[in-house]
Each structure stands twice: as C-alpha cells, then as structure tokens.
Image (cartoon, rainbow, N blue to C red; front, side, top):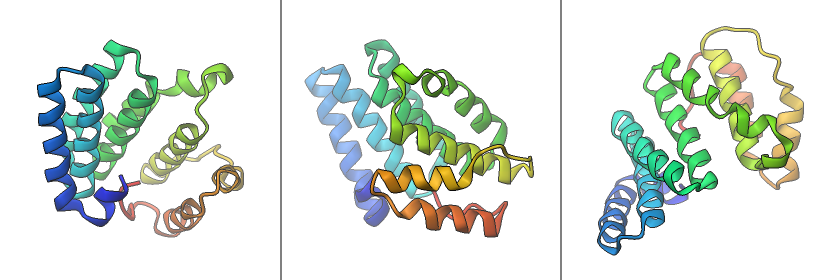
Length: 168
C-alpha cells in the first residue's frame, strides 16, 4: 500500500510482476496476495474498475483458502475503490458483507475494524445519512495503534462531506 501511494505507476508494474511470479509458483496464497497488491496499486492510480476486479480475484482465493486477513483487506480495498468510482450501492454491499467479522469479538481484527468503521463513516457522509459512528472513539482507536493520519483524514472528510479526499 505504501509503495502504491508514493510510487503508483511503479507499484502497478511491481504488483503485476509479483502476480506473474506467484502464478508460476502455483502457491495459491501468494496468487491471492498478489491480486491484493494489484488491487491496491490500481486503486491508488485511480483505475477503480481494474482495482475492483483484482480485489474480487483476491477475495475468491482468500475464501477458498480461509485467508481471513487477505479477505478483509481485499474487501475493504474493493469497497473503497467502489466508493471512489461513485458506486455507493456496491460499496455499501461490500462493507455489509464484512459486518460479521467485526461484530464477533472473537474474530475481531482491530486495524481492519477501524478501517471498516472509517469506510462506514465515508458512506454516511457521501449519502448524507445520519451516522451513529463515534468519531472520537474511532480516532482514539487509531491513536492507540500509533496511527495519526486517520485523524486528519476524518477531519477532512467531515469538512468536505461528499468530496472524498483520496483512497484510504
């Protein structure tokens, strides 16, 4: 993800090379993770339809292998790409499918859960729906994990409303 943010065009090439290598190796987990990398790179270059397709390929492999981490990150990326492309209905559906992972404390993934809440907040702002998301608690959750960027991102979201600042 970091490479995709700072070197988007190079990250697409690198992710596609990783995918080719993984496919040649035949290791399905690596193929799924490479599709996730392609999705991230495509999302950060603004190629949202291609990103969604890559994320869907990653999700398929994650489900087949029971790779929950890859499933969560791929689904979150897919929802963000759908939001950025303006497909609010698809993003809402994608995020809704993740709810079981975050409502069961035994399977909860703290960073992924925070990103899921942040995505829910974005959806509410895009659709002008009221939100029950506790924004200070969301910011505090990120802070406890040592992450400060979400606070500025959330402040920008609240200021700009329907204009999403950038992919998360």
